[in-house]
Structures are given as structure tokens and as C-alpha cells.
Image 1 (cartoon, rainbow, N blue to C red):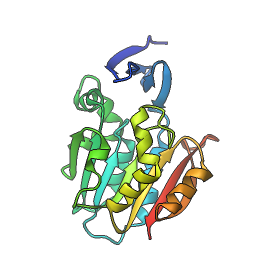
Image 2 (cartoon, rainbow, N blue to C red):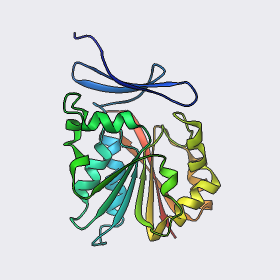
Image 3 (cartoon, helix red, strand yellow):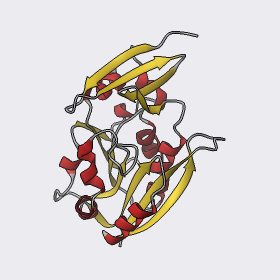
Length: 224
């Protein structure tokens, strides 16, 4: 068994440290030693895009916001589903993760076929909240910026899942637009909060990877 390689790291404002590692071909992103994601589990990230974009499949030139790059699986699935005339804005808070995707020696971008190189994609380094509430609205917003609506990675993410944050997300969507949020766990309480914010909501439980018993949740909210 090969030793674990530390490929990149970034210190967060609260002092916690995000570390990207690789061992036996498997990439992992950890926060202070607690694993956030592993490259071998990606089916639910793909389903985040597929389930959401199926709701707007009739739109010839949709504008889509993807919050959170991760290992690129959600972005890749979105690109595979979208037409050539689509526009995709990818927002990633952590510079080291964007850099790792673009670094051929680290090769994390190869996991999902280097989706940042697609001409439809505009990659922005920063907090996804800065792209909300603008005059230009999105047909779909896909969020995978934390382990769900509990703001585990960054306390500032909590605002996204609050009543005010959900209202801002709704106002950032076109009529009939779709908000999709990835979560490690189900939360009927959060689904109800989305309903109160003006979304028609359903929750899908999907496999973490093909054949796995482990399930993740996708919250899907369509603007009423």
C-alpha cells in the first residue's frame, strides 16, 4: 500500500485546515482530519445535476450556477446534460482546489474529464452568495458547498440555508427555475423551510456510489 500524499492545503479563517490528499489513486478532501469527500464516491454528486436539470430540459439556452467544485463530478454531469447553448457559472471558494484541478501533475481534474476546460464554463473564485440577488437570474442553481444544510465546513454557509438565504436563492432563479442542494443526510425540517420560502419541494434519496447501501439526499425546489 502506497503512503498518503498531501497535494494541497488551505487554512480557513477560523483556523481549521482543508487538506487534499491522494492514496492508491483515491483523492480525499479533509477538514482537520475529518473526511469531507472521497473521489470513489460520486454518484450522488452526479444525481444532483441530473435530477435538477431534468426539470428544465425544455429550455434551449439555460443559465446554470454550480456552487462548489469538489472533484468536478457535479459540474461534469451538468455539462453532459446541458445543450451547447447553455451557460454555466462555477463558483468555488477555495483557490487551492481550483488550482489543483488545473495542475496536470496533481491530476485531480482528470477524475471528471477536466470540466473546467469546457467552453460553456466560467469559473469564479469566491463565495457563491456574491452571485445571488443580481439582475441576471439562473434557470438552475446547484449547491454542494457543505455536508448539507448544517454549515459543517464554514459557519458562514449557514446563511444559505436560513429563511433569508432561501428567499435570496429563490429570487435568483427565473420563473419555474430549480434549486438543488446536496446533503449527506435527509432533513424534513429543511424541506419544510424550503416550502415556506416559496419552493415546491421534493427530496430524493440516492446512492453514494453505484451498488452502495449508503444514501445521500438531494433537496429539489422549483420556484412556484
